Length: 427
Ligand code: PLP
Image 1 (cartoon, rainbow, N blue to C red):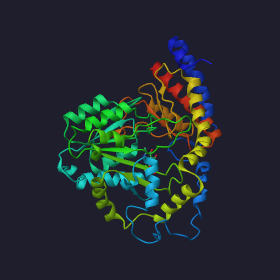
Image 2: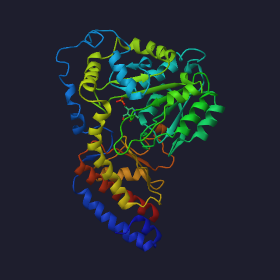
Image 3: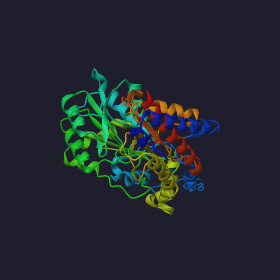
Image 4: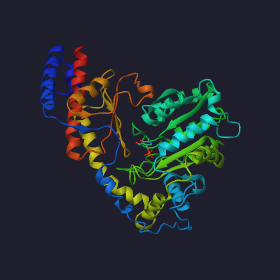
């Protein structure tokens, strides 16, 4: 079982033999007519079933604990009991939380729109008054964050992700030198796609660097995977307290949702920040809607208050997802030794595994996989403007397919990576 790395050290003849062996194997796979999908980070049906209790839980009793009739308009900040759920998720006081509709991404778009159109109050000018407002985009990152910037014409400046968060030397330089930097996207825990959790040093440096950022600058802290631990628990420091320490709590806007806790398409989303920021955001939110879906908010509050706590509920997800992540890691470890150009980061939770091919191979790997019936996220999608300067990063989303299908998909994936690598070396 010669690995690519061993073949690499061998002669041209050995490489050619390896290429022929892999190509034969690959052509056989192509004929199997596989149709598997490793693209979007969706929960599996078994995971969704964990929250089946949401259906019918209200039994026609739509009164919240404070007496609010959830069927009617109003209560634009969301039910108090649901804001408390968001506060538990984000580890902040509930007075600083708005509970909204089903999507935190919508809240992020509305928050960026707020900054762009009106600014967040105080000394902060609307970003549209700047010639080239820019966001710092730690990359690889979440493609949908980048789409928001792209749609609003906000420039994106990539900074590399490291094993402890964004490259803070680069972030500090940008914040010191460019007054048109108006935001940074952060997925601080089990980052999409790298799986990295920010170290406390990163939190401190980001808070400190924010002290000399422009008044309109905001940190978009998308804590989508706050309690999504599948192996051991990974500690993430408290960004709110860190920002308070440096006197920049007004720079922080946190987001979260129950999309990967209950129903991905029918959960509750949360935003948390200072009163002034939330007021500015509410101006946009309240123009778009007379109030959130409080019926669904009440369902969520009842589910977690009456039956099981949020964290206990997540143990069920961990049972389902652990074997899937183990499967991905097993295939990668069996084929690559971690010392070569092929690199990945093993994490304790979240929804993705980020894999780096030999530079210049990612697009070709995705193409090979597609021909073999495995759909992968387009190479480059994890970078602003869809451009991975190394053409190396591929995001693997292992949560949705059943384990046997994931196993087949991963076996095909590693074969495609090996074949692309050998062909590149052959030139
Ligand atoms: N943020 C991150 C980092 C994600 O990975 C995702 C979904 O994959 C979302 C936000 C979407 O969240 P929501 O369903 O609350 O809009």
